[in-house]
Amino acid sequence: MTGTLVLAGTPIGDVADAPPRLAEELAGADVVAAEDTRRLRRLTHALGVTPKGRIVSYFEGNESARTPELVGELVNGARVLLVTDAGMPSVSDPGYRLVAAAVEQDVRVTAVPGPSAVLTALALSGLPVDRFCFEGFPPRKAGERLTRLREAAGERRTLVYFEAPHRLGDTLAAMAEAFGAERRAAVCRELTKTYEEVRRGTLAELAEWAAEGVRGEITVVVEGAPETGPEELDAAELVRRVRVREEAGERRKEAIAAVAAAAGLPKREVFDAVVAAKNAAS
Image 1 (cartoon, rainbow, N blue to C red):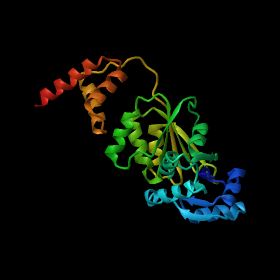
Image 2: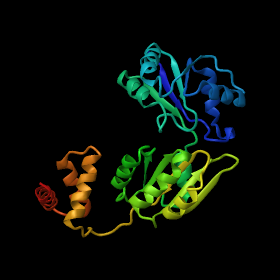
Image 3: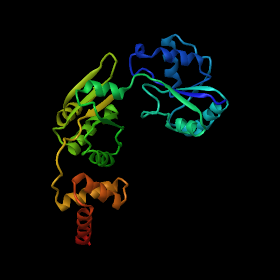
Image 4: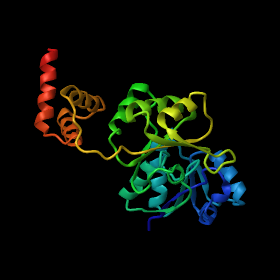
């Protein structure tokens, strides 16, 4: 019989938030794969647990190489526990490759649910929670970041992002440019920790605040786009939106279809605008 892969949520700040099952799984797993073995040791010490199984590192740098090894353990019947530094594995953390490989081998995959910065920030933000999407970390390069944000500008669901503190000011400024300066947002810092802070305001206000420098683990929640009727866009704006999507990697045909759908226009109208712009430039 094959073994079981267990994805275990770990505290995002306060160790008292650890679910009781986490201690049981840490004590009983045959293999514990940890993003940072030093942080794992601190966690097990705080929980009063001594793992009986083998402890191995599993992080971004060795994820591809170590996945086959762990799948081999699973196929041979081992119970493998995967933990990351904070929150749930696979959510902007190592784990997806191992889950996909385990599923391919018909290995059972289960989870010990635990704290999540995404859901905690969403709940504390004061913004709509009935529909939301998680966007992970924005690209580091300014041009790529602005392009990605512009792609999400028409998204009506509440948006949740992670960001590094030293990039927060630039990212909020880019959000203000892409989404509009008056779009509401919340910056959630150091969730569940001693210096927890939730700063709410418009993107312009938050960008000005963050320009002075911010520390800690950051989650940003942004209000979705307002519901409006079909946009009245001139040809130049239609062409610009198609170009943005093409630069992000979409084929022209798909980019034209997406822009037309978002604007409530026939695809032919957007296509004609793109062709006219190309002819004018040649």
